[in-house]
Image (cartoon, rainbow, N blue to C red; front, side, top):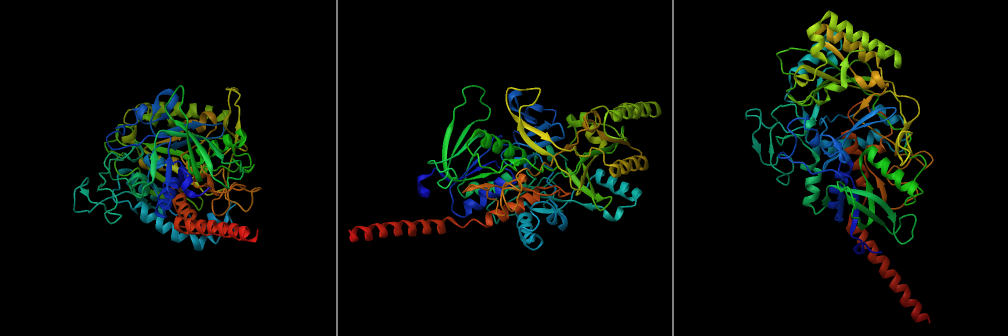
Length: 562
């Protein structure tokens, strides 16, 4: 088939960092691109004002929750991830950090490229496109973290985060509108950050550099089509060519349709899976076990990483300071060579996730830790009755709390499988297997305890870690590892799916090591690298024309010979 016989040259499944980069760069190269996104398109007008508006904040369509944040509890981990046009960029804290070079020497991708030489150019491009700059709206929570760092003797490691936020000119009032400041007038007008802390509930002030304001915005200007509220349910090779050499049929259904979901069939020469680590793994498991793409590597689902994360915090019940102001993650520190802590906040009034935290609890993971927690709670209420009661109440949580996002570069992983869970044997779903990820990071707990005492606060732990021995993470990575062969991973060093042609994976599932920092910038940089291997469409069209001409010439020669 020639390229003109397909509905699209590329179908991109998902519109997060990998999907948006792919859509823009492929459109730039002249390809006809369709982006399929199961989530909604969000604007300042329809974003929720607080996360108490669960119907517009949380993602559980079968319960009528059509927001953008999904919380999925597995046996080994609770994973938070985004669903929207723009993917996780709508709800992420726009912290864009380059990891240490050592990550390229770990995991399956080690040795696949001269990463430490190649990646800086792609990081530079990613930072320019995402508008990365140092935080210029530090808030009281950042001052608290600096104070804590001093008390722990690590003040030299304190830094203000590099973030994807437009701050405007210091001489202008926050919230001032400017013409496109990034793309020579090709991008949308922007407003400067007001420092409300609402980044993770969706920026309603047009200051956060979400993907729908850069990569995806420019892709649509180049002619890419985005279909929101649309879910891919099948991807099958065309014309009986099992390796996809002649392209694919992609089947979609409306995301929110409950009954009689009408299927739409689309043909494409190429397909890019970019539905996030969880989304891509889930879809590829369905396609592999359902027979549509049976030759996907058996390594699918292996070595899923979480950045070895833990969520802790310090609350200051009754404080007059508003700790919710600033940007969502405004500063960070390193308490040792492997452990990185960032100061996180939610905006005033967004107290829904307060139920995920409780009083700081030490002790070994397991049932005994529940008893330690109950004793710690009783001890706090007896010794500091008012502060103890206030510390576990949702009221004023966001204005009184500095949340700690703890990340480590130490290796650790779980495996995903596609099985029927014991509690629902009627259908298969993603399930986690393998050794448990540590839920208790002694160094981080010790820092939190010391910081709380030094600053007059109440230390906080994650409730899921105590009750279920399950850590929380917003950074699920891996599962479709980049590797030398299909025995070791799912994709090659150019993001091409092993055993298939014209099939790619470009999202967080390709990551092969714990980064120890927020992964969005690395996903963007790796997506830039992946797209750099794909030639402009004009070159392929010339090749097709020459191939066709060669066949015609060969046919004519054959006729003359007869």
